[in-house]
Length: 205
Image 1: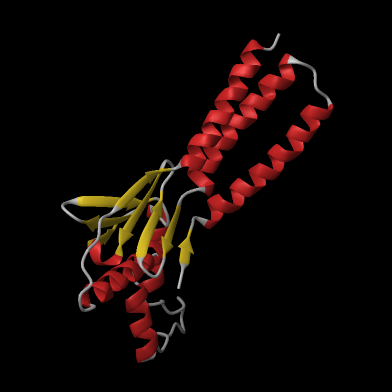
Image 2 (image 1 turned 90 degrees about the vertical axis):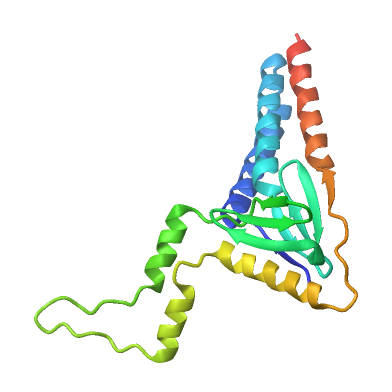
């Protein structure tokens, strides 16, 4: 089963930006005024490429056979059996092969999110006051609090990657295969198009 993980906030903001750009491009084309309009279009193109590269393109994809890390300028495909270890701090790092490390761009955990996860795992306090009482917590609730203590979405995704890698290594006859890295041709094409628009804005009188 294929699972894709992205930064939801970045993804939503990126699409809002694209809607804003589409409206402005339509307006600039309808009210074309020469060099000023070309400069505005070039600025929008450059900013849109940046938004695409850092907000829309990055994703972590879990497929049946491999982990796919889509970073801003590269796509790295790591077969499950080739993964040696997974560590999670503010980002997920996948150790593979002879010392290779794939740092995933998403999901990431900020210091604020980790602190919130720590507070979520702490036992709740009773109300302060004259008649304050300690809340009764069942064993199941306590176990759930301990399991969630300090854990973020990045930790959970790291566990999924680790479990799939361990399962792949346990399969009879499955040998680690080569990790494949390719350039993000979509991001490069977008950058080239934006550069062409910048040059056009410079040469247009």
